[in-house]
Length: 359
Image 1 (cartoon, one colour):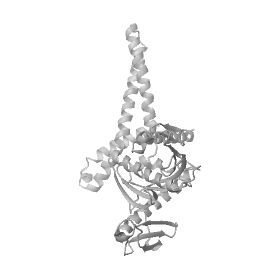
Image 2 (image 1 turned 90 degrees about the vertical axis):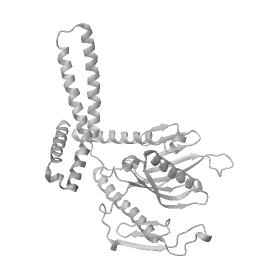
Image 3 (image 1 turned 30 degrees about the vertical axis):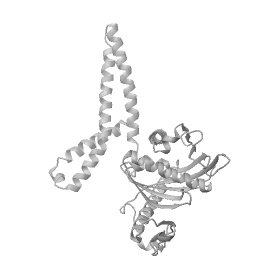
Image 4 (image 1 turned 90 degrees about the horizontal axis):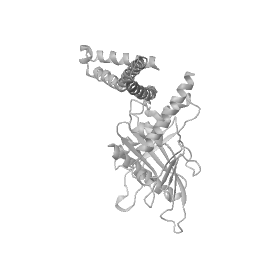
């Protein structure tokens, strides 16, 4: 590990020197690239330098304790040594996490797809609740949320909804939301007060730029149709809705929420590129591991990543065995504690895999 850290520090110093090179300074694009690479290493280098400082202080304190000392001074030195050793261990763990390979998509914006599973109208209402939860979480983070596409039900729910979330680190925070979300509560339409169980699936895809995914126009089948609506004055007379089929993969996306066919096509292409990028990402992951840890399954009630129990105000994430008794605040977008635990669990898994590999 320390050989890697020394390589990182050497690279950081090299990049710092390049930033003062007149040839780099005169090329704004290259200067920006080098400055970003230098900035990306600054946190881990600062942590590594702190580690080296604490290690030096630990060694000096141990040497002091090897000399004749008065009892009070020896007691103080021993307390200082214990504190330094604890800090050294903590810094070592932080550095191991920081050395883990970064997901290249972590800083990307995301597309969140929410679909009602089993449970009829109640599943659609729960899908709408999840949509609001992610929108409110985005507001807390200062992100911008944009509803790309939605198929509403008649009573305020959604058969499916596609949300675009723009903000730094959006994918790194939301990627573990993918999975089957199960809800247990008394539906508003239930007169007997009986608790029902319904489900919705969530898929979180990194939003792809055009340079990330090459799409051959010849591979696309683009169909237009009239948007469905409430009727009356809202009925679309023109075929503004767009459906795009990517023939090689069989992926189909559609958008009908905008009044312009061009806008609907643009949104549908964003959704298609995200699906294609995610397809590449999954293929790469499957080369490295036999099972995806956090995957979207069928949307059946018995197949779950997380359970939302409203009568008990309880949320349980079954992947990491975490239970929180504040479902009301979580549904209002207070997701950070849950997300932090999922990120920590993933880091622990990857650190364990690295140690096994090293062994």
